[in-house]
Image (cartoon, helix red, strand yellow):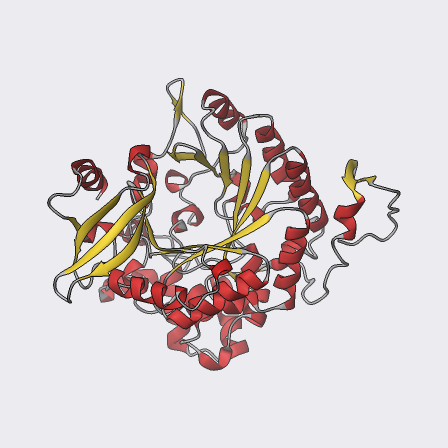
Length: 465
């Protein structure tokens, strides 16, 4: 942190109106100046400029515009300048991660293509086409709207999902965007401006009432979008209200900011205040977990992200790292091994390798389950013990988080050996089962639970798949 003008008498001082420890201040250095420009989003309206800067072809830019009419597109200068290898376009994995690509939308007729190319002309036909294409992409997978929205006194709670007994997801309305959008994002429906598809809580009062009525919820995940897109003042207004619920013991902050805008923790005007908020939560006897989303080891390579992670850890918060396995981005074992090692070297905890969820352009990104297990195992066996906290491959599906523990048999007659790491029905947690696994299976509904396996597992899977 930057401490010019502050004195550090003995063990504590008052800073920004709050008492904090001298140790917390001494544990962080002056901010890096590698990237101190104010955040500026780059969207579809800037594609012509990007074409000029990086020599993109007209066909490529035209394709991006078509996709951006349906799927959200956003990037920023940090990603463009620090993470993309512009000599390796379009194969570069970070370019694939943030820029729309051919094949991400279903095959379109000539007439549909012309409607999408009509740009700002918001004709009824174009609006209807875009809505229809989005609906076909399963905007809310795993029954999020149908099964995860909680009720209190007969009223649904805005901006909250409660799927697992101990954990509730909270979507502050001001945090429902990101510093850049992943092309594979399973929450893309949050970003397209349709209030019927969006989870958002304007204020925390409803959720606070729900938490008081449900003391089994010990863990709140603040998510979106990205919780770190909010100003610290705005975020604190939500968090302080939730801290009034004594039974909430852990605050998780889901974020891609470490990868896409590490300035949030280093050079942003309220970066110090954000870290002080983490310290306040921890000082109350609770845990802070920053759920970082790293998709590729290159995202961990800059001095700025290294400094951001060091500053977060200096507050006492723990950084957990997770990402999905995606074709065109990270579908090889060496990439994952390098990423997990880099995470541990930075003091973070490798947590999950997910499978591509059944939403958005899944067909473009999906990796078959047998291949996913092979990639995970090949990478995992090269790791030292401290890196083996990671679990995968995992499908975050309707009935719960299902991990593939093994694949046996021969091609054409493979068996997936799986278990529930988390489940909507707590009785299923930890329960193993076997399922027939076609060679090209890529999601839970492609598997068939074997005869003789527990009937409650088979029926729960069938209920949601």
